[in-house]
Each structure stands twice: as structure tokens, then as C-alpha cells.
Image (cartoon, rainbow, N blue to C red; front, side, top):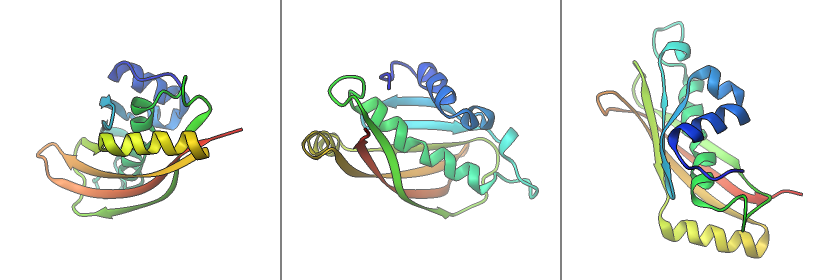
Length: 154
């Protein structure tokens, strides 16, 4: 995996690797070591009730578990062959999602270093991504908690 150098590059890479994310219109707003934010447009993600589809909200938060590792680890060098995988995830819907929303998550620098060291030593390391999905007014419409793993494949 190529390291993230800009939000535009991260969006392009994400759409290439997972085409459905492009169809959903998910874009990376910000990504760097330990943090990422994506935007989910209402347009293609509405449901028959006029609010954002639950699966789209979940997807916007879940993809952060792939973006943050790509922005935090050297997956084309020191950790070549390692990939981020989701092991378990849950979502709590708090309010209807109306209009475009953003999903954001952070991981502490100490946790990134722990995951890096453990992955190099054992070939895998689990980490948790807790995300908040907010609307244009800053209202939290959903929260997620995902257990992810950085794992060497092959």
C-alpha cells in the first residue's frame, strides 16, 4: 500500500481499491498519522425515509480502520505485506442522518507505536477505532467501535 500523501491521493487510492466507496461518494477530508476524517454525501446514500442509509453511515466509519493505518504505518517499507483488517464492529445510531455527514477517528501516538512493535514481533496486532459521525451542525448522529488488526498476509 502506498503511503497517504494528500486527501485527494487517499480518496483516489480508496476508490481504486474499493470501488463501492467511489460509488457512495465517500471522500477523505483529512488523514495523517493517528487520525482520519471522511465525508459521506447524502445524494447517493439516502434511503426511502429521506435520511441516510444505515449501511452507508456504517461504511463511512468502518473505512477509517483502513485509512488510519495507511496514514500511520510504513506499509510499503518496514511493514510491507501487512494489511489492516476489521475483526468486529458495532454501531450506535443516535439521530437520523440528514444531509452530508463526516466520520472521524483518532488513535494515540503511543497506541500506533505499540501496534507497530507488536506487529513486527508477532505478525499481527489488534487496535480499536472509535469513530463519531456528525452532521453539518456538528450533531453526532452515530458512533462506532471497531476492533481491527494489522496483520501480515502471506
